[in-house]
Image (cartoon, rainbow, N blue to C red; front, side, top):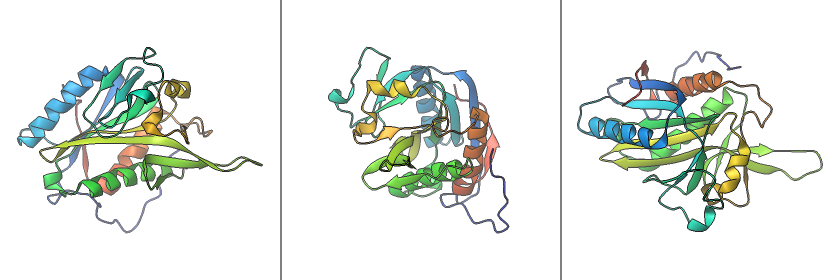
Length: 241
């Protein structure tokens, strides 16, 4: 499923650490509640800022829920009683999390990498696009739209673009938290309770919706390989908490 072709010339990670230290890579099996994950993530980010813990990328799935970023508009919550709604301090508007969607919480020390928020977000976009390419999907970013998008074409119909991955981060004391989500095989009807990321002109899609037979493990491996290209070395780690 994943393209494992080796590049004979290894380029330096575009957003790597100056000291080359590896980032922890943790995967939680089963569903993790949002409040529990948020508390663990914030505690780890604070420990990183104090120099008491290493960087960590934490992969997990949530039960069905909606989150509201700092730019969320009340009118974009179309069905407030459908799933639990959590207000968050991350950037962005409303988004959905649930089974079949891979969430990656990214806790990096930007002071050890680059104190450049725009470059960090661009690196997250490049990470997702690289991972998708390893799964035979062409992702792209679009001016004025957050996240990663894929073009859909059907005979006799105009092309359209659907969102396959979302990005929403917060940075405190130059440590990032929150992160990205990529739709592997979620129930796409669950997005109908919100206006995802404030976008009314575009839809959402997933790897399964695009016709790909892709397991969560396949997606994780693509994300892991792509992360190393963009952010540098990884080391296995336990989930926080």
